[in-house]
Length: 255
Image (spheres, rainbow, N blue to C red):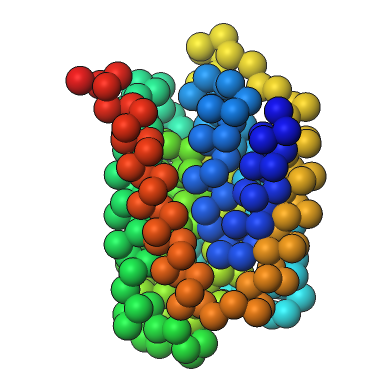
C-alpha cells in the first residue's frame, strides 16, 4: 500500500506541475496497486482528481493565472458532457474503456509534441468562435465521464491551440475546468456503480486527496522553476509510455 500512497503524492505533483495528468496516474494506481475494479477506480479517480485540482487551482487563482471567462464557456458544456459520458459507461466494458483511454493518451502525446503551435511564450493568440469552444468543452467533458480521466491532457492543448491562451494561463484554467468535469462525471457514475452493486472506498478517497493536495502545491512550486517546453515534452513521453502499457494490459481482453 506504500506504493499506492507514493502514487497519490505523484498524482498531485503531476497536476500542480502540468495542470493535467493526475487521472492518468490515478486510474492505474487504483487498479493495479490498490486492487479496485475498473469502474470503481474510474469513479474514485474522478472524485480524487476533482478535489485535488480544486485545491491545486488556488495558487493559480491567487496569481491571476486563470481566465474565468474560458472556465465558464468551456467548462459548463463540459459538465453536461461529463454526465453524458458517465451515462454511456453503462454500455461499455472495462477493457473497451481502458482501450479508449490508452488511445487518448497517445493522441494527447502527439498534441503536446507540437512546440511551435503550442507557443512556449506566455502570450495569448487568436481565439476560436465561442460556439466552437463550447463544442470543444462538451467533447472534453464526455471523454471525462466515459473513461474517467480529468481531461487536462486534452483540455490544455485545446485551450492553447483553440482557445487562444498562453501555456501557463491554460494550466491554471484547466485545473478549474478539470475539477468541474470530474465532479460532474463522479455524480454520473454513482448510478453506474449502483446498477453493478459496487461500492466506493471513501477511506482511499480521503487519503489520496490529502496526499494529492500536498503534492499539487509542491508541483506548482517546481513548475515555476522549469521551462514549459521541457514540461510539455516530458509529459508527452510519459503519455506514450502509459498508453502503450495500458494497451498491453487490455488488448488481450478484447481480442
